[in-house]
Image (cartoon, rainbow, N blue to C red; front, side, top):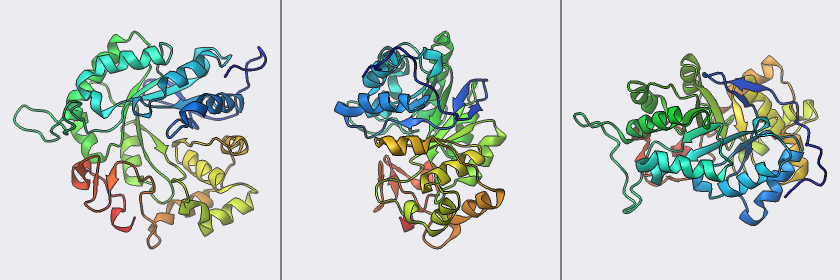
Length: 324
């Protein structure tokens, strides 16, 4: 996985967003989810060679050690890379231990540590921890956040920022009642069919940056066939992916796409600029019949409208399950 020469690879000209604690995060990160474990190291090494300076992994992806090895062999100083990882649902009971294990695998520094989901799972039974307040009992995600705050403060700079993933205005509202550290980031599924404009605006008002996973959907995504997106792409001599990333960045959102194709890797990090009118047209695309929908089919059940064992009401989500 090492580079063929001692010369460090050059970074792509990608803008950075400044988080609420001053840490700078690249607008485009390479997603490490669904990696081929045998080939993931080569793929991430290629991504760094192609100019990526952000990597997004998670304990649940089971590839933190591979990401750590790529970092060590990249030819870059650690401060040239921004690495996100996430606390697994099954480790809400042991935040300090989970963080220590992730730090060891990732070379002793994590730029952004996220609570992957608000739902904690009992590792021994597989049962969900309680999500409801009862007397003095706090929801699991609040207890978990308090432990993340402690671990962050005790890390002596080894963890540069902490945040959450898959949070809504509902879960955020409860969390912020008790938080000493305001989450720096909320990573959510987001794309033109699920822009989450209300949540993004709410988060912006509280200086919480929104980062998008699955910004292109998944395989056979209808986004790639959308007439408006293809029309705008043709006018810029660009790909639909480039249009979607430009739309996101214009709205102040970072993206975490994944690709193992060298040409697409380069395209995805070669940014274009949309007109204000084009951005506004994409902003309203989800309002067309049947288009407001979640495209990342992870941890949710269409049959009973749940995700990770919680109902949409518990999650506080409005993500078009009914039309997915």
